[in-house]
Each structure stands twice: as C-alpha cells, then as structure tokens.
Image (cartoon, rainbow, N blue to C red; front, side):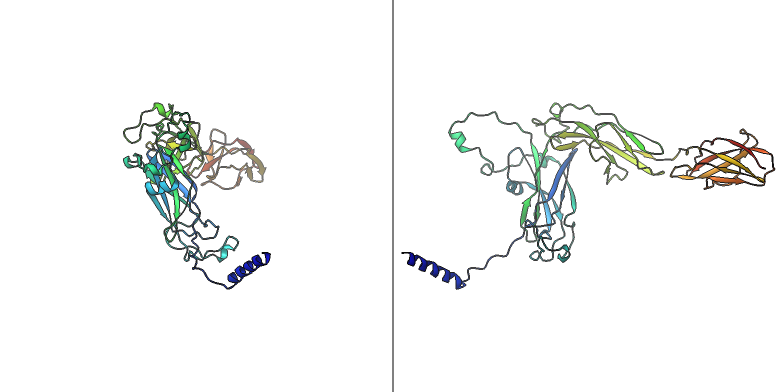
Length: 412
C-alpha cells in the first residue's frame, strides 16, 4: 500500500516536471493608491474640497498608473458603500494628472527614484495638492434615490427573533464626498476616505471689520457674532434644508482673509480665531489692503463658514515719524565741533538732519539733505562761540522725528 502511494506521488511530480503550459496569465493591472488628505470646508453654499494626488500604486511601485482623479458626491441620510456612491452619486469634479508613459513599466518600491521615467502630459503633478469646489444648488440638495436592495439592510436574524425595537436614529441630511484615482485604462483605484457635509444653514457673517494700523502692524477688529444652535435657526431662503437634528455647534470662531485680490482671497488664519481681532504684521507702505471676515461654526470634525460680507479696504500710508535720536554728544576741536549719536533702528529710515543755533529756540538745519552716518563734524567755527545742537531722524516718506537731546559746545 505504501509503495503504491509513493508511485502515485512520483507520477504526479513527473507530470509537473513535463512543463505543460496552462492558459496565459493576464498582465498585472496596477492601480493607483487612494487620494490622501481628503478634506472639505463648507463656506456659505459652496463646499471647498482638497486632496493629495496619488504618486504611487497600491503595491508602492511608481509612478502611479493614473491619468485623473474623479470626485463624487451624493446627498443621502442612508449608509452607502463607496461603490454605491460612485454608481448613484454625481461626479462633481475631474482633475487631470500627468500620466506615466508606460504604466506597465514602473519602478519598484526598493528601486532608486532616478530610474523612474517621469509622468508627462497635461494636468497636476503626481503628489500635488488639488483644490476643487461644488456649489450646493437645488439638485445637489435633493436626496439621491438608491435602489432598496442596494442599501444596507437590518440583520434578518435579529428581526426574526423579535429583538426589542430601538427608536430610529434621527440624522441630518448630508452630502458625502469621496475621491477616486482613474488609471490610464479607465479603471478605478481605491477610494479616498469619505467626507460628510451636514446640510445645515451657515452661520451669519460678522459685521464689517474696522482697520487701524501703525508702523508695525495692521489691526483688524469686528463685532462678535452671538449665535444660537443651528436647530433654532431658520434656513436662509430656499438654499438649504431645515432638517438640522443631530448636530450642535461646538464653537463660534472666525477666519480672516486677505481679499486684496478678490478672485483669489488668501486665508490669513491657520486655525479659527476665538476672539474677534487679528494682527497682520505684513507692512508695505502704499499698498492697498482688503480684508474679509467669515464666521466659523465647528460641527464635530467639520467647519462651516458663513458667506463673505463685502471687503473692507484701506491703503497703508506712512504718517508715522521715526523715533528721536538719542545720546547726542559733542566734543570741541580746533575750529570745529564733532557730534555723535546712537543709530535709529527703523527699517524705512532715510537719514538724519543736524540743527544748530545760538539757542534752543533758534535752530537751523546745517545739512542740505539727510546724512546716513551717526556722526557729524561742524567746521570753520570761531573759537569760543557757543552753539546749541540737536539731531532729528527722517524716514523715506518724509516724516521727521522729534529732536534729540540738545548739547551746547564751543570750538577751541
């Protein structure tokens, strides 16, 4: 019996050793990794989305087999799979990406980057940060219809055994977003994480800011917003639904934007501000500066911003004189008097003006233009005649400081 078994095993090995070929295997399909850092911010009726374009495949080879990233959205209060969102949702954005010349010839994870053939074509670089947006119109706010058999069903065994019924969980209508990389052969890679935006009215915008400034910074202040929870707030017109149960605002804060370029505002606050004031230390005299403040409402891990009020603008005009020079000292010399003082520290300093006179009440400038040095020699003086000196600083805008301390001296 044992000898027969061994014979069968040998025969099997011999059959394998004959090298009989099976059907050809299909080529390996490399899929791009999921878009990362997917995030959303709701500003008024606009959802701003951002993500990082994949740069590697799911097996960590590179460049990614990628020609675009699609962003999908669906409005629903049901639990849906990623596949259902892609199938029944709306593609709200498509971002073109530079694609590999030969998607079947990437370098492996342990190979040097110098051996990789760089992607080419139009679109963003792989690994770049992408920004897209969607306006929440009536179509976007309408709940999507997903076939009942496609939705998650309750556990049939629990229903059959008559488990106690719990009250239904009331959740707000949400718009859910996800991003998917698409290969050069039009196959979808894995989805990004989801971002669910509750469709609640945005908070009201703050009042117009007041702008003041000095030579060091611009101070922007605005009236604070006293906001009730959104469940107590009526929707604004017919733009947003009133189904608000399930969310309460955590905080009311603010974001400040530089809206000098209205088509490309720049957010100056990295995190929302708790207090209605901001100090902008970017000082450029003669520059026109415009600011917009938005109210920020925090709901769980999502921030909702108010609509933007009209910007408040001001031109930064330098009307601030430099500080008065200090520690002016004098020393007598043969037919001359030497002066020396401490240097001013203003960045826009243009120089110094030296004044002389028989008394502190009758001083006259003795230089025709501001001097750059912090010392001066007054020559061709009559010995024994006493003079009073002061020095003033002047900046590039022509603002003149107060006088330094006065010194009195006579040439030898």
